[in-house]
Length: 125
Image (tube, one colour):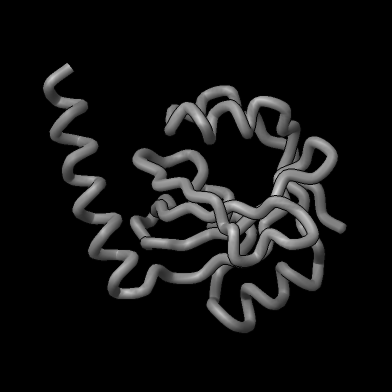
């Protein structure tokens, strides 16, 4: 198990995601998931974590995969602007990444449209 401590107090996203992340003290990685994400999608754990610190983040419940525990998904970008889809859960105060991959064409289109609207609204403030 890999535990990476980060401060999440500066996340400015949808209030529901902010509330969800209030009790999170760190990212926690299962070594198998780290390797799987790298082998399947070419995504490192560090790149997955970057998505949580870039605006905007599109956050949603992952009801399809929430049988054993509540799971969530988000669309966002890494430091290098890589559009990513990340699925995660919160367990015992830790944010556990389940999987991360490049956004599909449909996800990317939706994200880019929302990103444009987000920054247009930010400029009006």
